[in-house]
Structure formats: C-alpha cells, structure tokens
Amino acid sequence: MPDDFQQIKAQAEEKWASLASGDTPHIRVGTALCGKAAGGLAVIESIRRELQSRDIHATISEVGCMGLCFAEPLVDITMPGGSRVFYAGVTSDAVPEIIASHLVEKKPDPDLVLGLLGENGTGDFQDLAQHPMMKDQVRIALRNAGTIDPYDIHQYVANGGYSALYKAVTGMTPEEVLEEVNKSGLRGRGGAAFPTATKWSFLARSTEPVKYILCNCEEGDPGAFNDKGILDSDPHTLVEGMILAGYATGARFGYIFIRHGHEGPIERTQTAVKQARELGFLGDNIFESDFGFHLEVALTGDSYVSGEETALMEAIEGGRAMPRYRPPFPAQVGLFGKPSNINNVKTLSYVPEIIRRGGDWFAGIGQDRSKGTAILCLSGDLVHPGMVELPFGLTLGDVVYKVAGGVSGDRKLKLLQTGGPLGGVLGSAQMDIPLDFEAMAGVGAILGSGGIIAAADDSCAVDLTRSLIAFCQYESCGKCFPCRLGMTHLLEVLERICELRSLPGDLELMRKVGQDMQAGSLCGHGQLGFNPVASALRYFGDEFEEHMVNRRCPTGVCASERYSPVAVRR
Image (cartoon, rainbow, N blue to C red; front, side, top):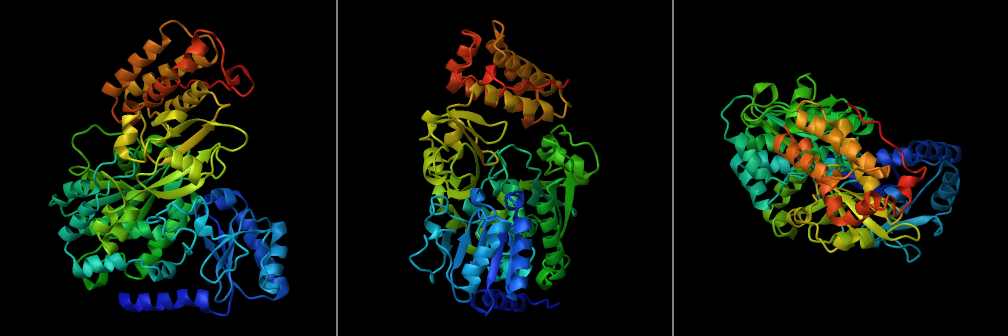
C-alpha cells in the first residue's frame, strides 16, 4: 500500500475521473437510512438483475443522502461524458423502464426524471441545483453527501479528502491549526453553541501524556437525523476532523460514539476508520511525522441521556450512561480519568474544509456570531421533508416556505418545534426569526441538533407539548430527583389538561416544577426540561386556556381517537 499522500491522491483522482469520462455508465442509488427505508436496497438488486439480463456493464455505487429525503429512493445515472440524471421515488417495477430508456435508447423519459446536475444536459430537464431544496444551500459538511461512495476512501480523497490533514501535519503547527478554527468562528452544533476553538484550547493546555477526542453521535432526538446522515453519506469527513482535532490539542486517541441500532452509520464509520488506518492516515507517524492518532467506534444502548458528554464517557467505560457531577470538567478529568474533549459529528465535520480553505473563508458565511451553516432536518407537515445545509441568516419562514415548499395539503402552518425535545415550540408568527443562535434563544427556542418539525393547523399545541414531555420523562436517567420527579409531574399535569380535567393552579404548578428542575438538575436534560412547556405557554396560551377553562380542544385532537394517553413511568 503506497504511503505517499500525493501518490494516493493522484491515483484516487484518476479513478474518480474514470467514473465520469470512461466508457461505463455510473449508477448511484441512495442507501442512507431514508433510502433504505424507502426500498433502496431492493432497487439496487432490481438494477443488477436488469443489467445482467440485458448484458449491460455499469458501475453501481451505494451513496448517502443528498438531502432530498422526500424523493427517496433516489437513483441517478451518469452516461460517459454526460450529466447526472436523477430519478425520484424509484421502485423495483420502474427499473426496467428506466434502464431501457436511459441506457438502451439513450433517451431518458422526462416524465420520470426529477432533474439533472452537470453541464452536458438538455432543456428537457430542470437543473436540480435550482430545486427549492438545493438552490439556497451552502454545502460544507454535506459537500460529498449523495455524490461519493461512503465505502470508498479513494472517492473521498479524490474530492479533496485528507488534504487538510496533510496540510496541517506537514506544514502547520498545532497552534496554527487551533488559530484557524478560532478565526472561523465555528461554534458547537450540539446545542450549547460553545466556541469550538475555546473548548479545544482547554484540552490543548493540558500536559497529560494521554488525552482523548470524543465524538457524540448518540442522536436520539425525535426529528434529528443529520449526524447519522453525515456518517451514512461521508464518514471520512468526520474521521479527518477528529484527527485534526487531535493534532490541534495534542490528543492521540479518539472514540466515535454511535447509538446502537443505527447499523448503516455504524458499518460505514467502521469501514472508514479501517480504510484510513490502512492508508496511513490513522496510526503512528502520520505522513512520516511524530504525530499519531488512533480511533475506535464505541456503541451505546438506546439512551437519550447518553448524549450528555459525561454520560457518554460513562458508557464508553462500560458503566450505565448517567451524568457525572462537575467539576472536575472533562478537559481536566474525562474518559478513563484522562483529559478529554467532546464535540458532535457536525462540529467536527466542518473542520477539514476550515483547515483546507482557511478560517476567514468559513467566517465569511453566516451572520453576526453565527458563522458558517446550519444543517437542518425538516420533517412533519411539509411538502419537501429532508436534510439541508443553509447559511445562517435565512429566516425560519425561508426554511419552511422556500426550501421545504410550505405546508403539505390544503392547510396552514401552526407551529414549529425546533432543537429537539428540549427545544422550543414557536408559532407561525415567529417565521421572521433568522437562523441565528442568539436570535432563536431570544424567542425561547434553540437550534440544538438542527431538527425542525412543522405542524399544520389541525394539530394541537397542548398535545404536542405533552408528547415532548412524555419523551423527556421516559428518557430521564433518574440519577437526580429534580429531573426524575419533575418530568413525571409535568407529564401528569399535561395528561390532565389533554384529558380536559385540569385542576386550578396546574399552570403555576408546572412553572414551579420547571424552576426547580432548572435549578437542581444535574445535566441539561432536567435543566432544559421545562423549555417546551414554557415556549408553548408563551405562544399558545389561549389553547391551554381553552382546554382548562372551556374544557374543549379547539382542534378536536384531545377528544378523539387521535389522542393516546401516555403511561407515566415512575
């Protein structure tokens, strides 16, 4: 196996160019979690059978998600010297017709095609780059998603992969790498939005010989799938980002922490780690330097709280995923008692492009203190649900109406639930709020993990709030009683309200419980647990009043079979 990076890069670029300019058609099929759920694996098998029956030779690649989740299974075909032509919602039954028209007759059927990417197309098809979900995107962490084969490290290298690592290790000091991240203005994408370079500097100052870089991909939030989407689509951008974080902070060991059961992201990340090790990008003496970095994948059970950084460390050590008391903080005493730094997938996945293109380039995207892009998961009552990477500064209204195509069906937008189950509930009147950490916090919401769930006007705000608290109550680890009992009390009260049998003083009781949770809980699960209730009361207080005073649900949800009581776990 060659150990010279420039030789590896040249070979990778040659292989990549042959996919587009060779004599063989290249067929890509989306097999990220959304593609598999829609039947992508069956489509691949159908394509293989059809090609074999017609004696057609083509290269078939499994790729990740372009973000057009509504269009999965997504299949795109590139003929030699041609553009990428995309077919949406492909079924096994549709494969013979697609192969016949596109590969045999060389005339793609306009009625079946979603659009194309490339300069060699015709006026018969729309430019997919101008699709509402695509045209406003600035793809940095998602730059390769849906384009490269996540199982092939050479495709990543051919598209600039590991160039930042080579640049850093062979031509920059750790301090210079840290300074580029500082200039970029990158902030954590896990919820707290803490400056990444500042967090790294805490670990860099430690003189301990053993230090750890940890990546959190627990991602148990309802409505969030971008961390899994990155690992499913381009795991090497995370691997490279973690190695760069290790170089900048003096850490030589790392763990990628993934929720058990997310088999696609787990398998593809494990493969990426193995391939990077084989090419010498992981291990000792990377690029013949004194720097080495070793990386492993660790799994956790289905525990939302294990995404809290100290609970994550407990799980890796083999204990129950429960938060630790602080201080000491992880940068002082972390995994296995050694100094540690924890970031999530999105944060680390930005780092290769920041180092490759410079911190000033990244800082030029976004607005105010929110630099770069936000990776959003759009779900709920939307025309175009999916995953997008948008520059900070666009408004929530832009996201809902321009990017996601508005509300599905003959309905109107009622609310957005943002930032996961500990985030906020916003009304349709707040659509002028920009994608900005401070602006969203100012209206009682958080960007958090990037999940945005839209609900139409036939949804009940009280019932939705109850569902969020039911999730949080079930996922409380139970270590501290303000959270354990507080979540239970909030859910009991919300159940009463939804069942139209509330008691006088229930609202005040919830506010008091929320204050106690914020003041006394050990971690953010309890400290932020009242957020969805507080924001729902702020923007939908009249709906709570209808339930409590007039004993009626304005939407009829709470008095119909759509309502499902939750068994309170004690």
